[in-house]
Length: 448
Image (cartoon, rainbow, N blue to C red; front, side, top):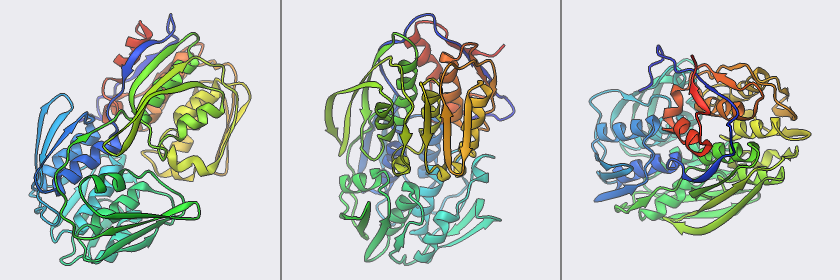
């Protein structure tokens, strides 16, 4: 667990040579969370390979144990979950502490809503500031009762429904977390749970539900989708191979694009089209990124990324792309800062309710490096060019701002520092060591 009282400041500087080599990034965080949860709801024993072993996912593993599942680590990334069956989770004897993980907190609210048990959930200082009403409001229609702090914030207590009712809910904003929470609650309900999204969001929950034997129908409605889940299925244990996290791959890809002469291959990356907006956006900016060895594993498209250094050009990134890259705007902003011309990223309201106000945090990161940036409403404008650097990035407990700031230091003339990189462990253990390996030098070091 990250100790807030023991901040880990780091600094980064331009490497002495191009980035090169083959590498793999940590397992996909979204799929890792879901593999543990669906394994806990399945009958039998689920084997998981490639699980991300960052703090966020380990919190989910601990929560599943408290809810009655048997969760064992067999080796590096290799786990086994013996489930309780749908409706079979048991009342936890202790508080569920979700640390920094908003995904785990919101999805587990859905799990708890459908089970007739009482539970209390909390998180770290960052998570306790994040709104939960977006899930507790629709989940209350199952018959579950939620008790939260003012503003719908953690800690919260929940009394799950004894006979959960199916939901029929239209998402007011595009959110895979809210959609997934509703589907998880719907597993315990008689009848059909229906979720309508006006913009398609990442569909890992739908894919994995099918993988474990649930009946899920997806229809197209305009630019969005209608997802229908038949309640009270018997989920059956199924093996899960977790691909590399595209969000994590994005940091290495941008670093390779920006450090002159670089050429890297990132193997085994999840390429779900509802997650791959960052690579589409980088391609729009002229990035030399090729896909090879494409295949399907566990219902998810996977492949290798071949990335070569490129002089990027500014681009207009449409708001419609936001759901497919909502976590990648900080690192896209780093790419934009080093590009020629202006990049406008549209429709970023959702960034204001992430681990921090990620829109303001991204702008502050670029300003600390001497880059030119503006916020116009919910749009972020970055005027690219030479990045002076030399500043300190305030991370506000946000792991993606921390990693983006360190990548920015690889191309900023005077390098960059981040005030606390400890939270990187929540999603990308070993990030700095991996960057240093492909750089062939100590490009990221502790701040003296």
